[in-house]
Image (tube, rainbow, N blue to C red; front, top):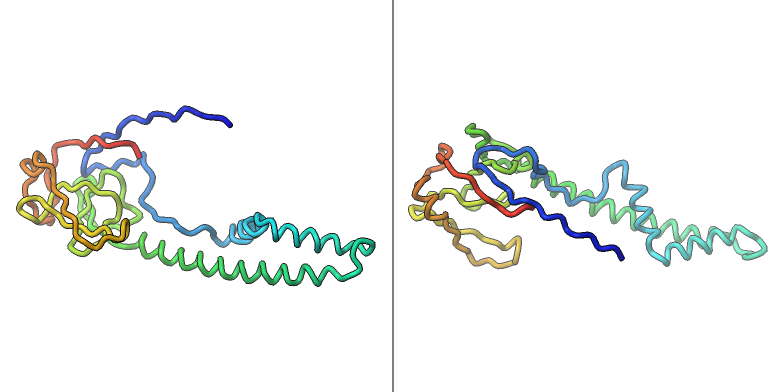
Length: 201
């Protein structure tokens, strides 16, 4: 076994409202295949199973009349049928994942980038963007609460997608940020004159 020392990453300094292009995009990708990789990757996954490799070997040996007098079709045809059914199931499941990814990536959020507010698809949200989240709207990414329509800077969130809990949890703005930004309606970007120091991803 080889052990490598984990490289220590510096902490991130983020300026709210200033897009940082050095980090990956917010695009969600849960699908495993595309049109070009489906066949080779699916065959690779199926041949990783020892039983499939065994039946393939038996089918190949049956091409030699001295070893097996029966036709190799008797082994290869059921194996091909099993491969085909598995590929159809995997293809359908991955197509469903593609559809779910497209829905998540195309969800529109109001974002302020470099002082300009506009509606952006979820996949184009970047580190440093300020995002306005409406009531009952899902969070598109990890967010830091800068301002809230609540006078005390409190927001209530549901984490059922993460831990299955349906109870609302309260999250509060940092007191110093509330004093600087104040309560905002969200029609204009909150004035921020600070930076955030965060752990590396």
